[in-house]
Image 1 (cartoon, helix red, strand yellow):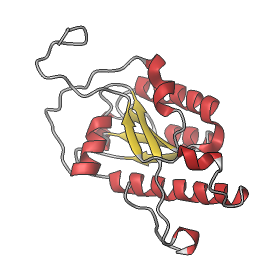
Image 2 (cartoon, one colour):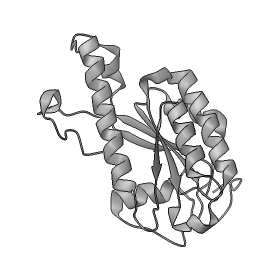
Image 3 (tube, one colour):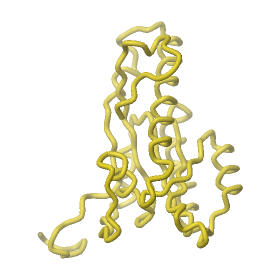
Image 4 (tube, helix red, strand yellow):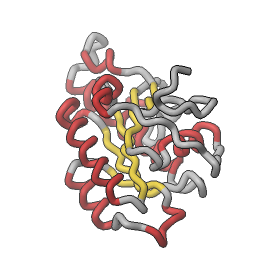
Length: 198
């Protein structure tokens, strides 16, 4: 998340921001691939699915987040329905302070689409989120997603600062800390599965 400024100058000029962003979604929707493409410009077609963490641990990871990237697979309706559950949890815990990005990944599989663009756009608008279309495989929409999220978080932080009188002891200042947190652990080598005693 290197883009701290951008257009317009103003209060962001010369000011560094850092934010905590969570990355949420069902297994196999492409979360790891999106991050790998954004951070290292790499894509692995033979990527081994990372192991899913227990959903109950979610609140530990997204507490005090400034942004959330909620990913679904456009070919999997169930993965889109799960995004709706994450949105409810995030809104319940963090209110409207968090910038939400709903991401329809795998647009390279458009012919197999099961989640309509209209449905996803409409839902995103109804919950105050922005909807993005990405393909980690084809490197489409990823840069736009991360840059737009950065801009939105900066705007939110600036509004927050103005509302709180730019005091450095405000609660929002303690929340800042750049992190991209994946809700899945790194894949273990050796293929022992989730229950191995590695």
